[in-house]
Image (cartoon, rainbow, N blue to C red):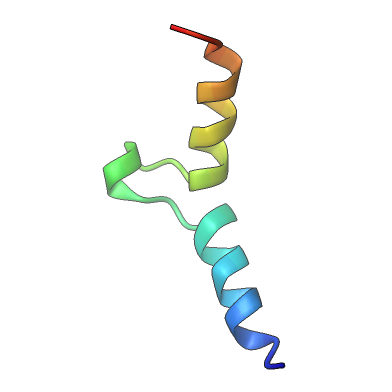
Length: 39
């Protein structure tokens, strides 16, 4: 199994900000949503 796709996916999902998420990383976006609790 190649480790590079796993490392790329981790970087993409945890380190890279996304403009669609208001320039947050997906991990940060998920953390903020979780903190908000149920609607």
